[in-house]
Amino acid sequence: MDQLSTEYSEDEAAFIEWHSGMPSNRAYLMSEAGGDHGQYVPEAMVDSGRLLEIGAGSTPAVTEVYRGMIEDSQARAPQADITASVNLDGNQAIFSATVTNNSSVTLSTTNNAAVHGIVYEDYRASKSNFAGRGSARTVISSLAPGATASYTITVNLTGVVDPEKLHFIVVVDYKVATGLNVDTGVYDQLNAVRIGGAPFRVSPGSIEMDVKTADVTMPTAEVNVRGDSGQTWTASVDKDFVLLSKTSGDVPDSFEVTVDKSKLTVGTQTATITVDDGAGLYQKQIPVTVNFILSDFQVIPGTITFNFGPGDPVPSAGVMPRGDAGQTWVATANMDWVVLSATSGNIGTSFRVSVDPTKLSPGYQEAIVTVSDGGGYQSKEVKVRVTYNAEEPTEFFQFLPVTLKP
Image 1 (cartoon, rainbow, N blue to C red):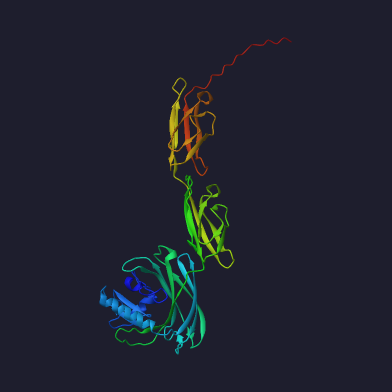
Image 2 (tube, helix red, strand yellow):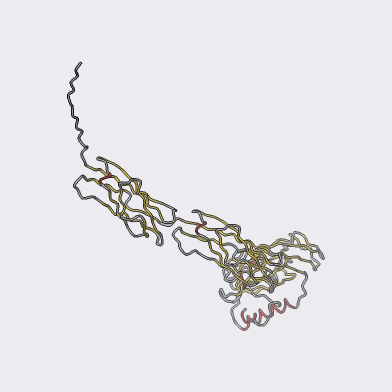
């Protein structure tokens, strides 16, 4: 195929290899042929299976067979006029085709007539440089000789490496026979045309980003704008947490998409980027999904217990905030008798908790130390339990006699 592709221009022949499974709308062209022409590997077909060759290898003789099949097809006059366009929308290619039936046959569901959209990429996936990326069909319910009708075909694309290297073909075919002649299938192709890419193309079709609360560097995505020479473009976004590196330019071009972390809320949020061509003829929308995720943030221990009395050394205990790198912490206490060696720091650095005995009451008392991440997204509590073994002060009463004289 690679050799033959150099002998014919793109307008003369399209070579397509289905490496990881032929789409159903192309496979049945072979399977319905029956006989010795079921689905084999390798197998080649021309004109929707009008001409078939199975079990062929890469030999000069086989190349000659393939060349003969192509020349046979080129010698035939097309029996349908096709005008078409295609629009790339994410992982779909949406074809719009207008077909005029110039044959003497009414195209209908009776003869399984259909308009097919086929997409392939200049990419070596296996044996050739032409990797099939998707194909689908729309049934022709009834199209009499001389009649014209329009059709839409939506093709799901898989395995695309570079959207700029995609090619688009529209085919009209129908079933002509129920029997089998040697090297001849049961379907015939009225015409096939190659169409250029969409006049205004924007990729990717969607953007999803994951951001953690501890992240300092925000993720980015590149948006590519392609089209005809001389076009311009503008872009806008409907939510302020999405940032665009530029909002206008000349085709071809690209711009970066990132987020403003300060405007995110924990959870999932969505936005839509709208890209318009300068003439106002085309518009593409890119949905953006941002998942703002809590970073790992832990504080250990969760409880501190002190039991001491007057004259004993004042106890203290270490507290360690830990978790994902890049975070900071702040600590506060809800009782004035709690003493903190530090009230802020970087994740992975500890501080100590102690008490001021002069502010303690005899007996049992509790306090809470709250440790929050620097961004204020989450906090943990450390309970401080203190038993201060001091005696209650003794109360003395003095009685003074009073003599009353009448």
